[in-house]
Image (cartoon, rainbow, N blue to C red; front, side, top):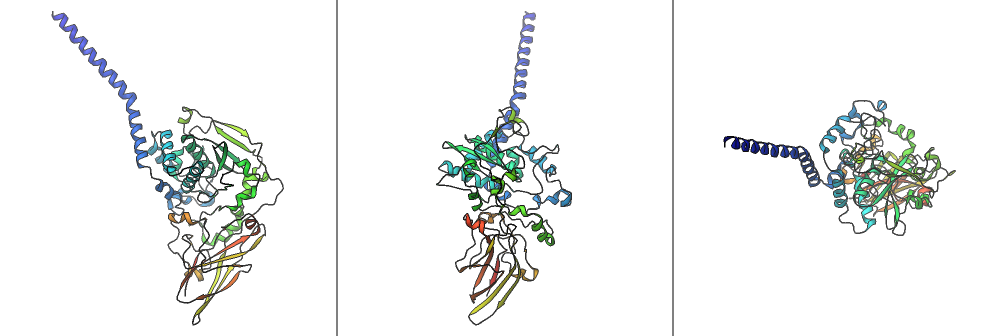
Length: 456
């Protein structure tokens, strides 16, 4: 009887051990999944559109300064140098977050008020443009010199160049149920998304605040756009503030001379054979499966190249440049009983293709709602600067708009203008050069002067 009882006790003990063993195995395999589930839920719960849009338009935040690397600008490798400590912290923060689930949530959250596919397209374009600061000196790169293409890491860093933003766009659209692909242009990469039986181009890098070409209510494909290549030059491009606080102000004039590419019209990079520099006009279709998207490149090392045979490239056209912003050199006010006379004088705008037509002078009693972070004109007239508070991220949405001009809008080919303005008022004045190519395609916004404030 004792032996039977002993056997039962042993069996019961073995049963308990087996149960504990199974529970242990379940804990080992299920606990990480539970932890990752919680991390994903927390990420979704805490996702705020405004946070990412604010950080991507915070151009003068010291965290984006290339000098944070502790190197002089001329020593920075603009391809492979990066803030690796910050990248590591972001990686650790996002470890375990389910990318597919998070991307789908972001797509749905950003586009929730859009009714049509075109509205979703533009809404997502605005979000990505506002969330991606193009840092000319640094781009997200790992210490082993491979690029950062993980979509959530890119969003968290807030710094992206064209290839980063385009891949992020493709991943978001695919998470939202759309087909999307990359487009190789001349020294530039953008995306296309498929809906309503055709592709539509999607550029997160060059254009300001979701600016895009729309023809008859439809955003064209890249190949369709190449049929009228200069239509792309009509929309606001490169309007992000270039007056970088970490650049020596005394070298600003030299900087314009040395970097004319900043003023090249976008059609060059889109449709000029010369800009492609031997690169073929490819589409890139991501082919990675779920497992392959688990690597740090998020599957972007798996893709198929497709030659675009419908794209039309310009072979011998001249390169068009937008005129550079003007620099004030003198402001004088002559007082009278009822009318004050104001004389504004500025340095000629540089126009690298010599088709400058003149200058538009916008006069208003309302500010234009945005400001450069620095005064870029002669020190003696800095007292007329309208906004000494400098740039704020909330100003971004005004960058692609013409300044107010309910008082007057003047045009002149001179670099000097005389204004007669009633006393006892405050006026805001901006000067904007314009050129023949821009006017021929309907361009409204060119690089602008600092805004000045005249208190008469």
